[in-house]
Image (cartoon, rainbow, N blue to C red; front, top):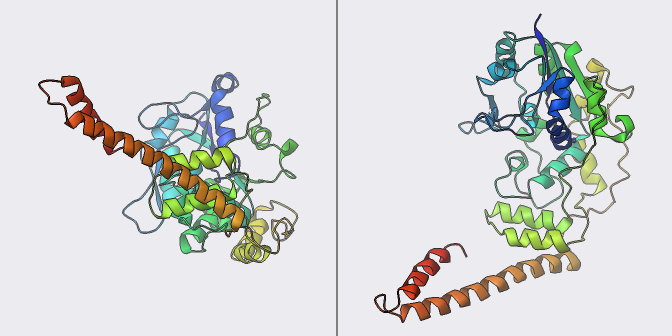
Length: 359
């Protein structure tokens, strides 16, 4: 009798990091309950999620992902039923790729469950776009780019990623509609208002694990300045550290009109998804309540937020200036000492010159 494979396919910004960390921390307890949690990278190192098994196709101009051809074989090596989690699965929406993947899985598994959490697209995009501001080269920037506003600019790649109906219909056509479990990421619909508890109920696991919250949202200034630094490909980690410690500007948010307009691109598709999968009793799947947004957006500079950003930048520049002055003095002293008379100074000179590039 072949084993069961449960695939947790995301999406990003739906508590996936919290779920994965809890599963990783309690993999022994899960194994005792008959579930092997797949938590390794292609190089064999352990990791809370299946990182590296799906990767971006850099030859394609579109935001397109490929699946490692050995992934199915590695999953099949585990004992008992298998559970695997990675948000990268949510970047796969082409049936041809999923058919090829399932065909390789069928050698090891005879039953499938696909668990996917979704949230209203405007809320998803705000959170995911904000994550892209945290560091240069973040995967989120490939979908949303580094726009210093609360919502990203609508584009085709974004449409492919956030069209839940197109994506989940492809998964259902390949793995079977009965295998698809769609959950709304909202505290009012999650069991006990907690995504980890909700997920454990999906896999019929009765174990009681402590939950945690990861990937806390950044503030307005940290997010906005982060996008601007990323767009210019500038690395200034000290600025981010200063803002994280001192910035209390609150979260960057669009206006109510902007949020409604962004969501309008996906509303009809959500309706079709709900008609097929009967996720909720609502016609359009998600609530049309946009009252959490103000009439005027909070994603443009004002005197207070501009001063916070400028102050952080000046603090870093001031510190760099002091380091440059110290380095110049050290170089001057070292260069005045011949190597044969003072090897220590000569060594210091070499060291200082090599460190100059790190400023």
